[in-house]
Structure formats: C-alpha cells, structure tokens
Amino acid sequence: MLQCLWRDKGAKMSYTQITHDERYYISTYRRQGFSQRMIARLLGRSPSTISREFKRNVNRHGTYRPSKAIEKTSGRRSRSRKKPQFKEIHFKPVIKLLKRNWSPKQISNSLRMSNTLNISHETIYKHIWADKRNDGQLYIHLRQSSKQRRKRRNSYDSRGVLHGKRPIEQRPIGAKNRSRIGHFEIDTVHGRGSNHCIMTLVDRKTGYLIIGKLKNKTTAELNKRLLGVIKKQNGRIKSITSDNGTEFHGYKEIEEKSGVKFYFAKPYHSWERGTNENTNGLMLALGGDWHPASNQTEDQDEKTNVAINSAKTQEDKQ
Image (tube, rainbow, N blue to C red):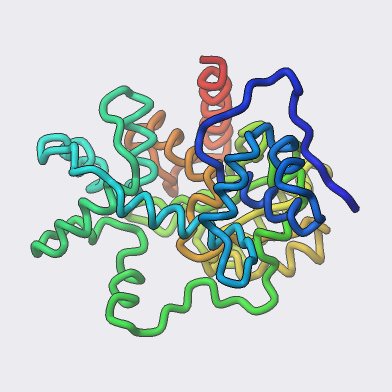
C-alpha cells in the first residue's frame, strides 16, 4: 500500500540536517518509485537537499540504506569536529552525576534542562574513554562498561543475539513518524544497592509515561509486570520498542498473550529509542537521588508517574 507523508504546502522549506526518521521515509519512497523531486515535496525539503543525500550516502551499487546513511553521516561529523570546547572544569558536574551511575544521555539531558551545561552525550563518552586511556576509572560507572571492555578485547559480545526478533525497521508508519498514539518504548532503570528496578514505558507521540516496579531484572518478572500494564491499558498499547537487554528476551510470551508486537533497536543504537532515554533523564533530574527501592510502594510509584507526566507537559509548553 502506498504511504505518504504530506506536509503543509505553505510551510517554509527546512534547511536543517536530515533526521534519522526522514532517512527511513526517503528509503521507503525510493523503493516505491518516487522521484527525488516528489520525495522532497513529501518531506518539505528542497530537491537539492534530497539529491545531496543520495549523492553522499548511496553505496557503490546505487542502493540507499537509511542505517548506512546514518553511519556515514555520523562518521563525517566526527571527522569534521572542531577542537574541544570544554575544559576540565566543565566536566565537574558531569563527573558528579556519572559517579551516581547516571548514563551520559541522562547527564546531558539533565544539565541542559537545568541550564548548567550544554554538552552532548557523545562528548561525555569521549571524555570517559580519554580518561580510561590515561588510566582513569570513570568508565566503571557506565552501566555497560563490562560489556564494552569485553568487546574491546575482541571476545564474543552476546548483546542482541536473539533469533527471530522483529527489527525496528518493520515498525508501523505511525510508530516511525510519531503520528499515532499507542506506540511505546520500554526500558528498565536499576536501583542502586539492591536488585529492585522499575520498568518505564513511554508513548512515542505524546511522551506519556507509565512506570512499574520490578522485584528483579529477570524476564519472568518483567513479563508478569508488563502483561499487567498492557491489560490495564485496555488496548491502548499498540506496539513496544525495546533494546536488546536479556530482560526483554521473553517477548514472544508478551506477543502471544496480549497481541502487542515487539520491535528491537539495533545494539548500541540508543538514539533509536530517544523518547525513553530522554524520559529516564527527566525522571532522574526531577527526582535527584530518587531510585527504585525495596521500600517504595505502588502509591509512591504512581505519584512519581504523575509528577513526571506533569513535568513533561509543562516542558512541552515552554
């Protein structure tokens, strides 16, 4: 079936860089036989922008793949970056939050929201690995630090090895372009000093958050909690996108019992679940030292849930 994204004819052409989502649209429209001029019209872009995208990012066989286009673009950006604009003093608030086991993405979001420091998570990662090369210990605070160290020694990396999983590229168009309510991203946030953690579900269109407490980070516990949430939402959850964590490897049970389809982002592609990453950062920014704990009741979870949704609404209005 032909699928198109029409933009307002009166809207001005955008001269910002092409987004990840737009690259998937470009690939879809190209396979459907649309001309470059038509693709430009559908996306509200100038024909020269689309022409330049193809010239720079098609492979030697003339095929355009959005994932490869994203990789090529990221590579060009990293090679053309200016000299570092941050000095050691700028990283003091970064290091403080990193030692609380916040992720670079959460640190970046929090510091921007508080107008403390406008720094990207990529810059934070670069600082961490530069510190490690100088025998520093900042990297031990990364949640996936052990897996990254194993990968750097060229040993087997099992993350994402799940046969039969449904890739993120197969998501419905309403999930890809955030035009439909009901397409959620899922993640887990681990508590410090205990096995307790929470499950977060965020709607890609509205940013609406649902949280649920987990006794542990196992497949059985997550499936039990998630099935309860899906049932309570009474058909409002249409699809779920997750990373490749082992707690999500029981997804087939979820699909069979609820009819909700699971989609998996590529390993190490956290930006494909940006809605959830941003919400987790907001959760930590609002809560300060808040974290999942064994003594946190469901009422407290619900109050946290309401507070975050309210804060997200206020943020969207600004």
